[in-house]
Image (cartoon, rainbow, N blue to C red; front, side, top):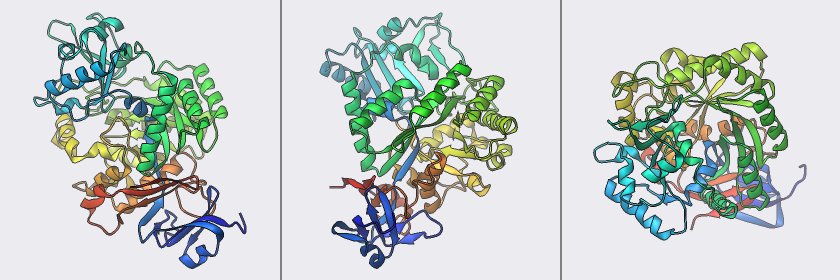
Length: 528
């Protein structure tokens, strides 16, 4: 790019580059989709073409585009096509919304809803199928919780799915029953698949339109890269179609799903997909194993029993097949992701990665543990020692949720929840994400606000939180040579904020807005 002339100039900014060699700058020059210079106003202005677009940043904080390192993008998009139950807590409110949605969609064979929060019910009681039957009885209804770990079906949906008192599920899956042994309609974790598989998919054009809408939402939040947790052939084909039709304005890396029934043939197919999808806009980056659920739903695998109910959770994998499949994926070049929320699952994941290191002598694996909601003190230093990233979701530690999690684990273990600062101090790399739509917010600034304002010793600095959403996100997907920092040669993915996070009252971070998003060298969003 020697002598390249810039068609886009950003000047008069407070530019945090994410580059320790040149942490702050005033201006950025962009040629096509690459950054050609980052520096002072005078030097950068000299690179402008005669018809260059010049944007005055007016001192606003400018950052690398946000990288959401763990998201369920297609699921989030499809939620846009469903009944929205966010904020509906009482049975009356839920019944009203479901009935109104059903009336507005009389031709839909199924009524599907999302963003339901089971914890916000006035009496903290899980509902039953009868409450959905009161809204709609003649069509199957299925409602997903906001975090994706709990589903709620009406009687018709249970009948269509063939769920009875004799239905047996394994692992973290649960079909809740009443005192007579009959299904209540509440399904936990994988048990939801018994109903989901019966729901006809939305038409292809509606799914593409939903992905476009979700992509525009991401742009308004400054998100220019995502890493999709889980996926298969259908996932890749849908994303490929959306990319080909220019409906996506972000970069997508996908960790393909590895079911607990996986064989060597399964892994061979994942490796074929990795070779097929390897573009900077859409690529297969790794393989995701799911060991447990989450703390809030009491489906995480814990070392000690829950404080407020019986049991300590279960794993979806036995150690030996898990270790063998990890090693097989790693030997083929698939990055390893493991969903492990509870401390017992986290330990199993760390043990598995230690096994892979011995078996394969992997040099730069960039192993990942997703969520790590609670970690035993004896396992904290193992992250850095084994080179394991802590891929965590700060909004899951929102103050409105921590009380509920504290009740689940008890006061002694509450201090072990979301140990961000301890992991960082021990030398582990923190990577942040939203887990959208299995969380309260897709907004990185909401996550940064939670991380910086958290009460107690686990709070982070603004710079640490920004790194976790930018430079570390790029490193996590082996793309740190392309993005995650604002410096010459990098892809031109940039976000401009309404406030400087470094010098405002931290309590104002959540009120900060994205003023502008630049993706691939093009301005794709300006706040009105």
